[in-house]
Amino acid sequence: MGRVKSFFSRIFKSWAAALEKPSKNKNVLKKDIPFPAWMLGVLISLSVLTALVAEFGFEKNFIAGSGLFVIIWIYAAFSFIKTEKEMNPSKILLSGLVIVSAVLMTQFAKSREISMYFVFTPAAASLLNFLVSRRVAESAALLISLIVSFIYLGNFEVFFISFVGGLGAMAFPRRIIKRSDIFLNALSIFVFLLAANFALQLLGIHSSNLIYDGIRAPFLVSALTFIFIISFFPLFEWVFNLTSDVRLIELGDFNHPLLKKLMIEAPGTYHHSLMVAALAEAAAVSINCNSLLARVGAYYHDVGKIGKAQYFIENQLEGNAHETLKPEMSALVILSHVKEGVKLAAEAGVDECVLDFIAQHHGTTIVQYFFRKAAVSGGASDETIYRYPGPLPQTRETAIVMLADSVEAACRSIEDPSFENIKDTVHKIINNYFASGQLNECPITLKNIQKIGDVFTKTLISIHHIRLDYSDADKPSAEKQQ
Image (cartoon, rainbow, N blue to C red; front, side, top):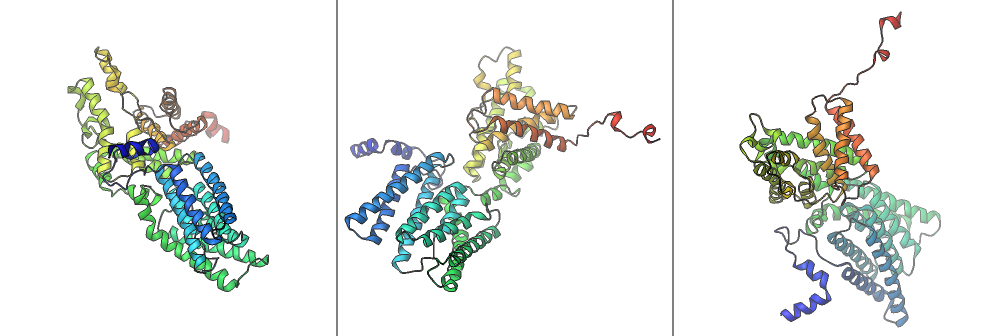
């Protein structure tokens, strides 16, 4: 048995290493599935080749032509995957399975002589658009349409209907926020398919009855897509451990047990989290990243303070719990809220993309207050005792929450919250994080940082109700009115 494992480990070295890693979750399905891209390429190639050979026969020229088409198609598909930074193993596997299913279903429909206007591209594009990304859905729609047209002997009519149906699946709405959005998605597919059929009819290309296939088929495709998405969307989300906007909205509900516990046991931290969420959402909108994810991540970023709420200043009503502790012990309590937060949120069933905010919102910074306090007493020889374990923020959203967390806390303690004081504090904090390398591992630009700082300043001025001090020259006076 050991020799067999060793043999396969040499052949599938990276895959075997991934499979041997322990799961982060109790549910074996809810993790990144370690499925290598090359293996997925083989799976898709065989499925497409099977569909084409079943259609054209087993003659050498047909097999050679089908094989060449598959090679070109796979090269185009995986060239795109390498450029898509958001593709993790689960998303790659889901994309591949969706494409394979659409191709095989098309071949099955053709073998049963079902109308060629009955396409599966809209359902595939809808699922990928809502669970993976719009770019992946666009590429999948194009690639599926090319294969479908090849199955139908290069029929442009089929390619056009399939691709336009895929575009309709991505046109409106872009995101699922509520259940009615799934109906709007189906309606968009119907309108696009109907328009495509009428366009082909006007061009004289439509080869069938317009009423029978040009209207009935779009209606059936859109209706079945609606049923498919509303029925199986949560299943795909759960199995592949992907977090949709619908799931984020559920996590952002203040009736969530963990958020209610935070509100009751650490009300100061809860209020702080709401302020951070307001800042993070506004900043995320300004740089065009996922504002909903940033807001929900901000709600949960400090849940680790629940167990020792009295040790954090925003929850202290009388006295300071750190007065009786040594700086090292105080730092240990402060640092522990990150680990405790990840543990509490994981036990509450919070998704991994939100757990990242808890783990990364302090990066590898030092608890400066207690480090300096220890230095004064001559006990701060090892700064690792006072340093957060990290990791550094990996996404723009987690970086925004890190900055918003520090900015909100600092501006809350400003004695004179004037416009200039708030602006200087915001930009000083952001520059310190940038200079210390805390933003090195996330794809954020200097332009993004400038916009984030400006939005933070504007939002904090609104929160603190700052009134501008007009000069005497700008104020109406009795002398000027005479």
